[in-house]
Length: 538
Picture 1 (cartoon, one colour):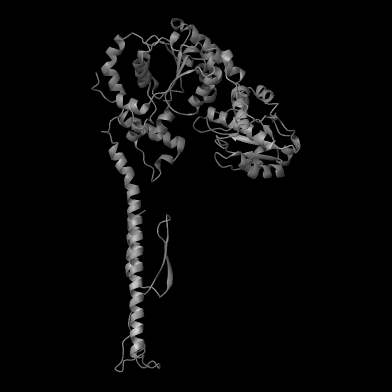
Picture 2 (cartoon, rainbow, N blue to C red):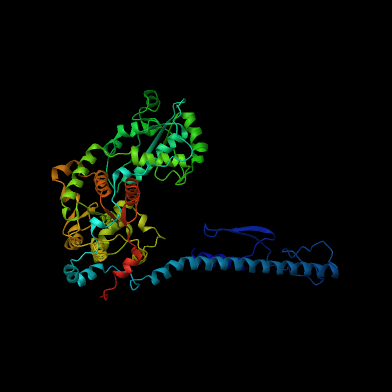
């Protein structure tokens, strides 16, 4: 809240003359308004020789008789009482305004103190991992011992035949015949796995509303820049047939409905649904509109269903995710080739390999607002990327950007060298086969070099696949991410370096496939950044 505006209001309260019993509203900042009544500062008219009050016109004398001494005393008493009340009221108002002012001041200064506390001198707030690597590289290179062997990393031998099943709960799921021919359309926005979540939620809502689901539309996003349709990512026919006992899924709307809306789905009634809405919301708010118009569209649809559902609806969400959604034939075929080649190149570990999901793409580095070792050139480049991808979001007046605090709190994406030092420190030898799942790494030549030195058997989809095999996927980030997803799915160990939908879905999927026996490494980055800044460690 601007201090100057509050000071002006206080001065006005103390100095302004106002009519008696007038109600005032001072237009302070939008955060609040103060309503109050004030008595005036009294001015007494001059009196003539007989004690009568005179008017402004000197030629006229008031015709009323002089007040008696007792009445005059009562009048003075009332005036004093009113004056004291006005002063007390002004003091109360002044006290309230002062308290509000200092409250606002503390709330504004608080983030500044946090920034000072986690300045560049704070432990873990500065990126120095590249210095640590240079200092200890000779020791890392000389140490070829291994305390971890992938062939015996877990005493339990995984078997795909022992996969978990979705718990159906106490209420059975049955498909009611859609007597009213109701249709639900959703626009799934976001990246690959955010859209996957939306698709599963759409199945649940269609069953809840007893509606036919139109194959979900996948929205284009200016960050992922991947123009695709449902059939480009998933097997449409498998999706429809797998869900046939629970809901009806169609590829297009009936001709009569399309004619009503001039063959343009965007003309259909669009509902703005609150985030994380419970099932009751859809029954009370969405269903009446759906019943009236026979078809509704919900856009955007990301995170539009509560995480907490009755067991029978939770079953349907699980079943949609792990059984109904299967990647398209083109994606599955390429992924199978890469898994086979990865196993062949992991002969020293009995065909077992670990997969690492690395989020160090240009857009991720920019979005994190973290600072690495690129200096002013890096800062300028990231400013351009943020402006291009998110407009003025990071330049808002009251937005606080604190790179040191972000790193201290474990919110900065791990660099390839940090991943490598962590794995070597855990006991993985240099001959450990690693599959790196990632988009285009920011300044890949510079940042990937240390990781390749620590793990020479590092592979990516670009090193495992031929140019001809990758050609149909070029420019389609979601399809490439789907290939990475499948290769990571069948790895012996999965390493996640940053939060997000990709690792969350993958960790759950691996547990589902292997009956809970799946190995995942999830580093504590808050502790890790402290270790990786201490250049004096021996």
